[in-house]
Image 1: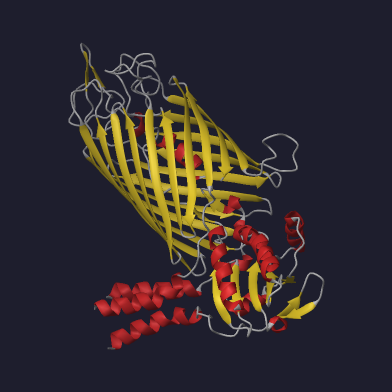
Image 2: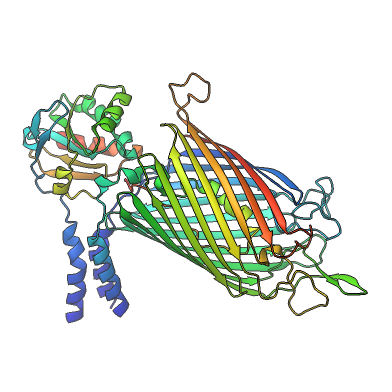
Length: 380
Length: 69
Length: 162
């Protein structure tokens, strides 16, 4: 039996002998900012490096400091922005700001006879949350690269230790991803993607509290959510070369999970070259979601399962953004803009979320957020 | 064993179905035809979306393009 | 035994479709160059020849092209030459690339907008480079290009020039 498998693999091997284009050697630096009406204003930088070691191997590394974190939710009566954290001047037990999250990633991609294999590790830490991730992916082209099959696995091991609690809890996640990219014609390429995510452990945000309000009493309890969740999503996207200079991407994703949340996501992106060096993209995204079976906007008594996280509520979102990129052109007289090794990136986005009942902290149903990113890619 | 036959048949059929030849991929070579041409931008967007919404996954991997080698 | 035969038979079909060409004579062809001159591959017998299939919209092809000029300049005084086959469907794109190079191209470029020649070679990706010995036999094949391959290229050419 083993010999038969060897023969099969040996004879099929020539199918896989295609080379893959290597990524560019580059450094990308981004300054990302986020402002919303839940009183969170953040600027957070990130740096990403890609370097080719040889014809078949490249490594990536990145570091970012991030303050959008659902882990840093503080007590309900001391609301301060989306995280409901205290102000920057007052931190946790050690009096340092709690909103900062540091994340470091390292990865390697190797081309083995046309098959691309990657492995990535990530470590993320803040004062009340840590996360370790290992991910691996294999990408196999077929039929002169008209078809590419991808299979990925990621494992996350998270620890949650809120600073106003006396416990540490774990959450472990396994993700399997299957992807198929298919060239349909000289101007159309489609991608199908299926994700299966299994989560075990503590699910709520570490600082969330459930307000129990009845006629005579107001008291708070910790939320209780199921300790298991299986999530599945199936997406399809298609890129159309609508003209010589422009492309239109249309995408749809259906999501469902064991908490009864079902969602539909539709997105569209129109990209066009304004010149040889300048590109602009307009994106629009619409999202609709049902609520988790145990979610309630308000509680009048304690229940076996209680969830208040707005993410679990029913509602919809609208998201629009515009992205601009400019690659340096040596014919330009302006400094920096005439450096062909530099690409400038700018992005502005507007995000609106409506939930069918008010948020548990801010007590409003409408979230409005603005996102601005400025970036610079440097070829090395 | 049956699944191995199905796999081999699938590979044979797929390898014979070259829809677009490598030299016909001029339009596909446009970086705009790639999915997630800038994975860092995508990661930033997904991060703020994942803390606001209850869904995850099914949103693709990098790919597309001309497949020049 | 029947099962093994079936496995081998179904698996060998794609193997035949993409048969290896090292050691075989390079398939003969002719085409018109940028100066409307008709040339044939057989004109290059007696020389070690780098035969390259490329297009101006292909990023690794654009990175490789100046290196081919470098190779030509380094080895042309020995029995060496370079012949490239351009596959651009729009001549303007080809012209734009050559102009941007800002260098004289010392070797011949065949224009093949109908892509008749790559079909003969069953090209799987571009750029594809075939290094032929003085008898016109394919000795090395390179699919794709990265700058880390430059030394390898030179070693292969030198081994055929000796």
